[in-house]
Length: 355
Length: 222
Picture (tube, helix red, strand yellow):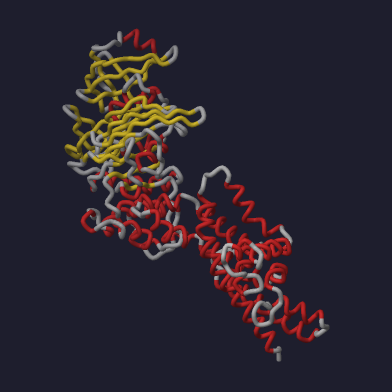
């Protein structure tokens, strides 16, 4: 636990009250609707917002307490804003070098060339920022930030100003970032698909307070938190490609003691993937069905169930260590006798594979 | 050919305008930066004060400057020498008179660039001074051009303040606009034409050169 932030702030009728301890590795997503205080939290950590009474420490260094306020430029953070905000008076190359040239040689861990390669902007270096598309600008902004070798990367909805196509263009680069740089990232977003693809840890913020924080799989499936009751409720399962079945174009993925079968498009043996399974695509049966077209059927144990309105229940079942969510009717809960500890079979109709 | 006195008036005017513009940019930049960034609730009072020369008749300004700088004024009483009817007095008058034309475009330019580029620079490791020099100043470039052109042009065209505090001493305080007035008074229309027409041509060339060189930037227009 090496990033901690605690403060409370009242503005007009809104109170933001935060007490956070985050691991300083991997991608932590701060998730919440707009106006929930996500950006303010990020700005306070960056030192762009001076909130009286705040306590912020990072890896043993006090960034802010009652006597200390380390200014932004000395915090060694990287910050990617919603808008790319490239310096209009500098070329793309000069933008990239702006941050780099201010980092002492000893602190340079990420080479500019590597950042340029990682974001695929090698051909843009001599252009004027104004001539780039929105997606290209944001990639330059991300590379500019990476080139400063930050110890902590803060990203404030970096994809929200982009259309769907541009988003898809950048997401793979962010996933690369995750894989290739051991850099802790705090990622603010209100888009579940980005969070599902990128995050390891999740902090759920609503109306200025933290509803929960922890590993993303837990946060998605805790029935006392709102994410498990959204229309698009889903869970994530980590798996590794165990073997490919060339005859049928399928891949066998190992997740704990269980094997998922999915279409193999582009997968290689040994790839680590995330499986995204919607609560709509999981049905529960008392006995193992035979003669079904569904490939992925697993024995599971009910962990808990929570009513949703009059007619529906959200059921959390355990597949080994991995939780799955199934949205079923109240009638089914009665007929199957669904209660904690009950042994059932889960039929998974659809699995989305995230690289 | 223009008379020697007219040539002297031309050079005196150019010297006055250049010096005033230089001083205004030097003093106006921090003032405009402060006005653009401060959250102080009474900032509007300072803005009103800066804009005052826009609305006052130049003679009002000139009158009080004359009293302030004159032989019986507070400046002289404090042991300073009188600056009325000197070139230094003209510079002080011009700086005050042209102040809004320099500070306002600079303030607008700093405000237009906004806080975001400066915040970005801070996250990239730039100190406040570094941010000011490498981000705020270059981004405000169109504002500086506008401020310099307007400050310079406005000083060349001033008449009332100069007449009040500088008088009309050829070679020392006689500027172009007053020389033209003198020629018209003495019905020497040929000399008046030469100076007035020359001033129109000079001003046009100057503005055209600046606008032409900065086609990429939108120079503010008043």
